[in-house]
Length: 272
Image (cartoon, rainbow, N blue to C red; front, side):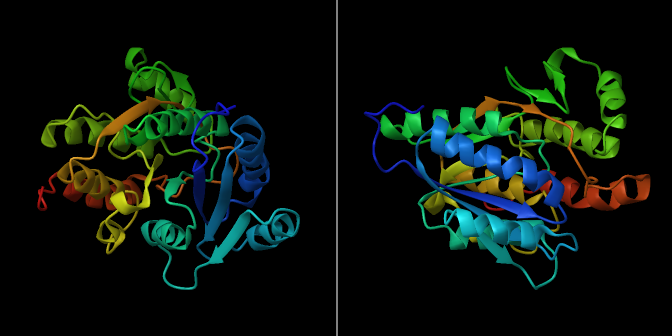
């Protein structure tokens, strides 16, 4: 539990962009609520931003909302877009501190707790920081493989193949992040994380616009570096998804198509 003498403005808006994640949400949301209410004891809202799911996501969330007014639901009717789903959640957030993460169970409430504790410890001590969940620092791991620095890519591939995740997506992430750290001349290790907590006024809405998928996060990091924001990475174990299938793509053609925006972002100079 966060200590009682911590500032009373510890309030968080948690954004979950979703597309056919009903089965995962049934497990994830109760655990998130338990974390925020019982373990951290902070004021919160959980905003589910749905991108037109064809499963029973909307009905399930509506049932939760009848019991818990801190759970919100936004249904997007425009063209499907992960970045714009997140942006809509940010715009709707009532609290100044926001966090977002994948809704597939890969980013666990346990990991959320580590990020939030670190974030509010810095915030309440007057040392504002952006906190990013990283698979590539101490305490981090990839797709259930602990201590990723000491695991071979072949071991990771074997583990992912036993799940519903994408081997290509895992390889893309590892390679892109190595390239990004070099090109951006930064000690940050996970520039495609998509797992973050920060103050809303640190966010430039333009980084979400005209983006195709998770590459938006690279532009977000570039924007934060330009603003000289203090950024800290917290290691977490990125688990394999519980139900459903990865949106990254499961074949080489989809892998290449999905990877092109990441490559473009890797060489992005922007106005940094």
